Length: 131
Length: 385
Ligand SMILES: [Zn+2]
Image (cartoon, rainbow over the protein chains, first blue to last red):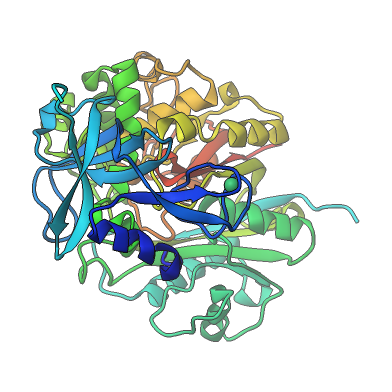
């Protein structure tokens, strides 16, 4: 199945995550973000891109709360989210530290790093508007 | 060289069940044998095959479909390995026959003896590093797309449930459906069934079952000599947006996937969506049915739930849909599953459906995949013309 993403392409991403940094490929040629990582920039086909730190702030594009998780070890309910990062890229994640009925499309969220199944993952949580 | 007209001359369908005591190979061969008998043809005459090699055994070489030559004990002139099932499978086979790459091709697939060992079919949860850690699975991807639609258009949950009711009750009446005899269902059964991933309840979602199916495609000229009326493939098309289940799916990108495929398929067929007598649509969930009617242009975006509720999709409705019980109730066999839409369409056009037969059905629309999978396909079948 879709296992063909070269590890050398993404090992730096995961290394940065372990160090509490959310990064994504930014093209040095055209300046666009893209995710997931590709060998070539999907905008200009340049191979000259590097992982650049993200502000880790964005909005919920969509979400679903899973009440019957597939696979083992997931909590119930499990809030899955599609985040539109402020820099204009996207990623799937999980929303934590909130209840399913608090989740609405368009809410502001921020990244929060936590361990899950013995590795660090970039979760998101709702932003406190008072900050 | 003149391209030949093509037709479906035979279909095969094994027993469909939540789990079968066979293996992938034996169940597929059964379906192929049934399609040959149905078409009144011998294996010797088949010189094209299209079917994923499912194992056990075989190699890892591409094209994997060639591993089937050892099982069949013969050589072939054409093999389909790109997407050897469902609408893309029969369109490729039709093109191969039409262009003279082979004379008669069989598209087949299925699974058996798999689901009893693992509760989750592997295709539903690819081991992608940006998907798997979060706990995504097929229905959740589709839910991400549907959630945006629900937020924007606020469809009536009760009216949406009527779609599941109608399709599931068709399956309840169909002796060949996996869910035969269950139900009948009412709207409250759907909305009271457990939430799996909102907005989808358990009874909004398709089955995961076992069984196999096969479709035999040959020239119209040859099919006219077969025992059953030839079923013409009038048109078809596919859309491939992105690889499935890798990157986030977004309503704004895939909410109208199918529009281009429908437009090309209907243009080739010289028909319009209103000309269709029976709709065999890929009902991976109830909302995908709504989305497809909107994408067909039979109603406006956001109006589909009301539109289908008012017009009806059951046997006596204006738009009879998934007359066998669909993926919700008839069967959904993973690889090979998309063939089931074609099997039921052929049966409708032959007036031999074991589900809700639509009287004098002459044209059928079949579709495959959907928004959450980021690809879609459609074909138009007809008994005359
Ligand atoms: Zn670029």
